[in-house]
Length: 244
Length: 245
View 1: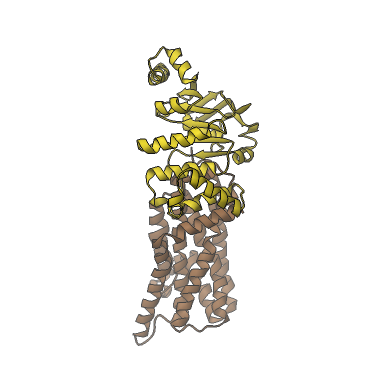
View 2 (view 1 turned 180 degrees about the vertical axis):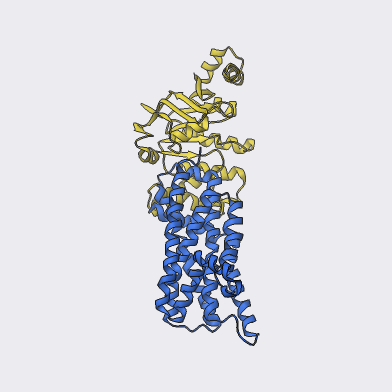
């Protein structure tokens, strides 16, 4: 079953077209990586799919609900881990988790139970009472992802989740993301090719607001006759960048 | 429910900033104590606590523009706002969530200010309770200015405009502690075109038991409050739509 279906999804800013007639379909339970150089339209796409930005034209359907006509129905089913760490700085780890659970409609007891479960999953128990601003960058990012998962989203958007993390913290987060595969639909944007290759079921490459290529890492390598996935990405992204 | 959860977060963010607490409580109280001491040490007390207390109470409320403005501006500048905007929070949840937690904090600040004033000699009677109600529109006015400032400005600009500029305006152009008659006709006219002097005068009238004089001044404050809040809400809703664009 299709989890995300975009139909000619477009976002324009005066002269600039950030996303141009995007048509993609993502199956339920898939981890779909959206790749592209800076300004390719990845974050704009995620913001439209998560109902933060309204499309200029076109639409997208998330588990059957339109982002244009039923944004609040969509919002109940999704969650986002934004590009930068998104935590309430003066709230403790536990309070951050309980706040998000509460905003998504959980009662106090359920929010507390879910918070404990998330802290166990993400290794945050020892810092439960610490304020978010006192955590290391890696721990803040873990908290940020835990805040996205505490609402049991059916679709999760991870916008460059490992940006700025050291190798160990990145691998820990990869492990956590792998555990989610198959259970929920995940859309991941990243600049790290090895991350996309290691985690994704399918990969879409965007350039200049358009979906340039789509497939598994192996299919994209084969399509470009490249030696590695990074070479395949450079070939596909540079082709469009140069053509414009 | 969602509104109150968001409001609770906002209250914690403000109260857990030691600078906020010291500014909101400490600074007005220091001014109140200092001027009372000065007043008591000159032949004719130019700072009687009956007129000083309402002025300082209004001055203290001006810091709530800084608190609400800074919180909103900071939220807007971080990815935390992206997370909130992707959540089921509505525009109304955001607006009430930013306004509601500041109201009890403002009342609490006024209570502390008036309690200290009572200890300094302000007669404790029903008029002291009345002034709490009279100060409420002024509290909402300053919260509304903060909402507007935080929506339009970054946190540094909020510090300059809602902090330095507004607190000085509300101090010097309200007659909080300097009699506006001493400032000359033009300044006095300007002061009475703004809401701050009216807020202080409404408070002074409440303390004095001059009930008939409260409403005319309060109407000025309420008028400004309604206009500022409506503008702030309209601008906030508009900016929320385009916050990521």
